Image 1: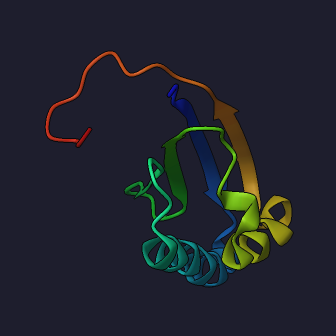
Image 2: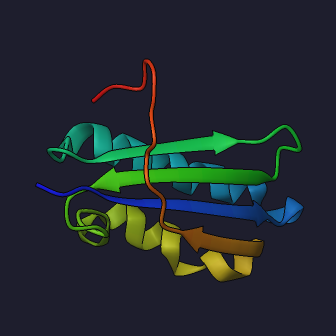
Length: 100
């Protein structure tokens, strides 16, 4: 099974940060309930409090995200909530303690 990988970086508008955090928390909570096999989703909040980096790994991305109600709500106004956003694929060259 091959694993797809995505790195998503974005900066949220200051006046939308509380809304964004609530939507993001709902996505992580739904993933914890659904527990899709082989899927990993990590969100890092940077020191400025407005910038984020998501690391997404799993077979057949973007699945399972489009099937989650919380993710649909999260994506609904993402462009309006963000000042900037970029997505890139990546290859893991090595890791320690990050799980298999």
